Every structure is written in structure tokens, then in C-alpha cells.
Length: 253
Ligand SMILES: [Zn+2]
Image (tube, rainbow, N blue to C red; front, side, top):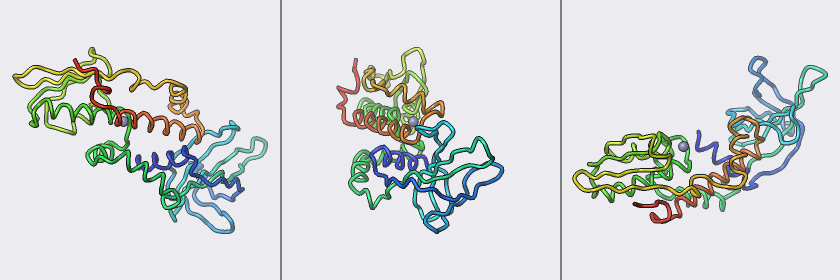
């Protein structure tokens, strides 16, 4: 489900949408006030899943529900509360193009998930994120350092998606030492020295408007387009991590 949410956000962030801006009639749950079904162009569509709820870009009284219908179509369904009278207006902002419609995009997506082990880690974890990608790369180095067996200690600078990936990749002894720094890892082979790895800031703290966007998303103040733009920036960061050589990714000591 997490991966599917990201797939939809990537499609939106890449502009793979059909703008509709059509008013619709919606049957809404009277208690939780979530959409149940709606009529678009004379046909009923069941809301099978609400993928994301976001604020509107322009209108603070409006919110966007990214939903999947019973027939598998994904729409941005928007609601504006009527402040004077009870009730609200609903409209469909856009439809997200499906995978057959965006084959090129899917191909790029698959390329990013080309390594089966990373894909398995992402599926188990619920999402693919930069920290998970870093943890996977640390695990690959650990296998080399430990000579193919799992006898060794790994110290990680923090509990994160990275340490979860490392824990899932081998039966080595993983410990967290918060004093070491967020992306600092020490690989201790039994009876044979150790290797220290540190990920440079430019791969863990992307610059630009990323931090501001991240804050907006985490505070539920972002619109669906902003959430999608955020996902694309995360994807770019993951691509840079996966594209880096061991030397570029780690200051090895
Ligand atoms: Zn994560």
C-alpha cells in the first residue's frame, strides 16, 4: 500500500495526470465525512481506497482526497466547505494516468528498483526511502568486509530506516550508538580490524526547498501537488545514492 501511494505521487509529480476540474455529486459518510461514492459523467464510482488527504493549493477551505475507485482509477477528489450554508462543493481536479498510459515512466521507476534485494527490503519496510537505500549499501559493504559470512558487529549512528535495512540483510550483530552521528557506521569483522563509513551531507541533507517542503508535508499543510513534488525530490535523492560509487557514498576511514 505504501509503495502504491508513492507510485501515484510519482505519477502526479511527473505530470502524468489528466486535468478535469469537473463538479461531481458525492455521497459522503455522515460521521467521518469521507467520500463513499460519486457520480462522474452520469456514472457512479465507488471510492474503494483513500490514498492520501491533502490541503488545496489555493483555497484553505478546500481539501483534496486522492482516491482509488472500484475500477482502479485514481482521482483527486476535492471538497470545499460552504461556510455560509451547511454542506460542501465537490469536484474532480484530475485523474492520475494508469500504468499502461505511462509506460515510459514505469520503465524509469523499475530501473530504480532494479535490484531485487532492495525491492524486497522496500516491500517489507513499506516504502523506499533514502535511508533505506543507504542501509542497503552499508549492508553490501559489510558482506565484503566480513568475507561473505555474517560474523561481525555493525555499529550504526542511529535507529532509522537504514538500520532496519541492515538488520534485515544479515544475522550480524547490529548495535546503535547515538553518539556516533546520524549516518556513521562501523563494521567490525571478528578478529580482523574494522571499517568506518560516513555518508557525506550532500547525500543525506538535500539542499534547495526540500527542508521547507518536508516540514509542510509533515505538518499536513501541503497540497497534493506539493506532496507529489516532495516525492520526486526523495526519488532524486534515492537515485543519487544508488548511482554513487562506494567511494562517493562513504568517506571510508
Ligand atoms: Zn524509510
